[in-house]
Length: 105
Image (cartoon, rainbow, N blue to C red; front, side, top):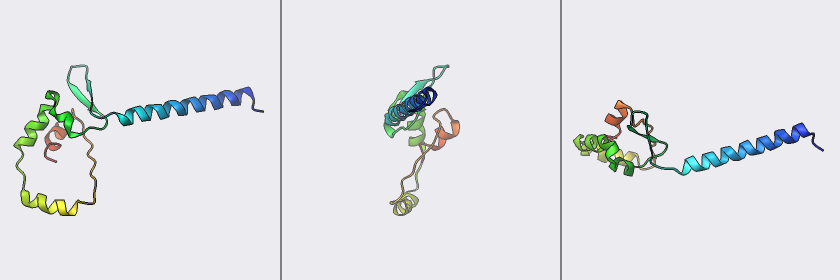
């Protein structure tokens, strides 16, 4: 038979495990989460897809995307080499470098 102290510890561990599981499940399922900062600007949290950049909050994406001139020859060569790869991009929607480089990626 377990002592009271051990039972309490076991219950705490089960409860904490449950909370972690629920937290990860909820966060993992969210895509394109937009939050407002203290100064009123929009910021993205977590996983996003391209749809989120259709919002006026992120007009910098479309502006930089449209102004970039692509090199079709290089793109054609890269597509051949990258067929078996999945590329994950990490960026900050508040970061000037991300705003410049993400749209052209």
